[in-house]
Image (cartoon, rainbow, N blue to C red; front, side, top):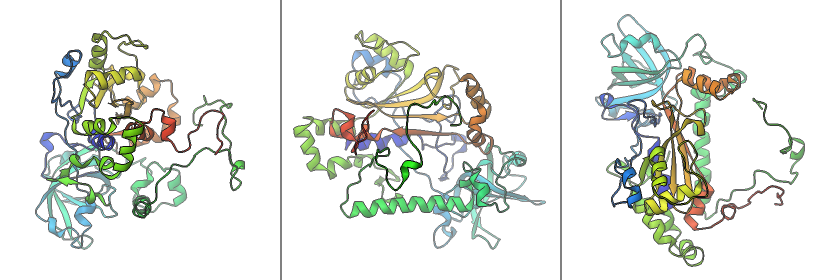
Length: 473
């Protein structure tokens, strides 16, 4: 259905190709998503695709539109070394590996770097020589650093692995101070690793735990879905005192809160090696009876509306262009329209429903003053690499941003926001040890349900809605 299309197509926002054109390689192994910042060559963002002419009010903003790019899936180390031949079939092929350095062993004429991308227990052994492009950075290739390594797969002379990567180029993305990085090659106790929980997924044990946990969660959901069960979100907050839990903690708004500190991926429909977005109509095709009901009794025409959204291209525009569009509309809004003020629901709905005739719209590059401190600053010094996806009737459905990966910039933003940096020690550590450009987004799941069903009140899209003074179930 169209709502699923909106959600799935938004995956394009983060996992795009990270490397610039000069770093291109036939195949890429990576765990790192592409950042959304306009401040460097890394940026690869969703852009406008305007198949039909927009209304006059939107013409100026739509003029600079570009096509929304497709999601491109990268191979992982697990897919190269995880087969029965342990990677032998890849010998002679060029690959780009992206991951974190586990170890670096320098010999007289050759250097061995073990790189792990989190997809499996096995590392990719990378062999460097003084002729390798970027070899002058070898002193920065320390445990915990994040790197991009390009080369050709070759049979390994060692007995621990069948293949290795003969490196032609290495780029250090995020350095890691070897004197203070808390996770070294030696064995560490579980108790100690709990004190560095933000870094422990890079260890063999907790990397494996995360992958098994993921597989168990997937298998559990798959079992119930295959056997006709319906997933229901049970209450997180309840007034019932179950199993003595009432003595564990209590929930109140009376206390001050000002003090700080307080893979079955192959089943995805694809075509020519890419995700086949023409199939993201899942709900329309698999919940036809329910959708006919909503079309008859809740919102007449919802099926046509969702089908229309699923087939239309997304539009993208900057926050500045959106403000100009709203001012030019000469429409009287309840809330003021001015650069530097956040967009309200009425503004968002006007943009997607009126200005762009029901097409999903991505707004990007918001003023930094109205966004969180962790969003990456753009070169203009006024905006950050943030985005919202707007859809008809709901307004904002998805919000996301590129995170600030530069330690000095992040510390400066904490100071500007009058936040105690000591309270964010673990967050700063992630920039201090092997930082990488990265981005993320969140989807309002109940809003997605509301959008798909036509339900007016979001409380009706939640199995057990909670409101102040009411926790009866």
